Length: 90
Image (cartoon, rainbow, N blue to C red; front, top):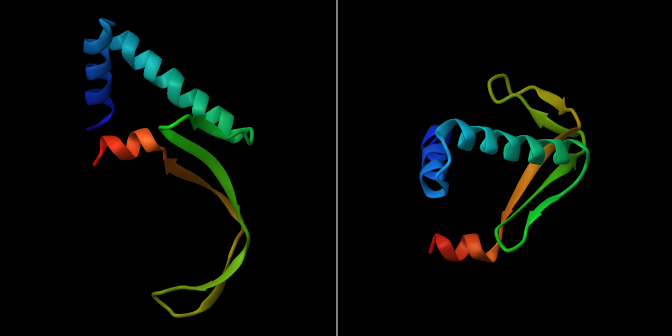
């Protein structure tokens, strides 16, 4: 399922127009992204937890050349499914 399919399903279930459902979806996603950007964890109880994890610099290697290299520090987003989501996919 892609974004358009999801927006259409939400529009149908909520009696919103596709445009309004799309705007709602965009606001939802942007709000989550802004929260993560400011260091906040997003926790939809029982469904999903999203947070930013700091990675330290580490040694690695280029698989093509086998040369050692330093992989710089960075941030990554982690997702953890809650019990409601886990039960839904069983």
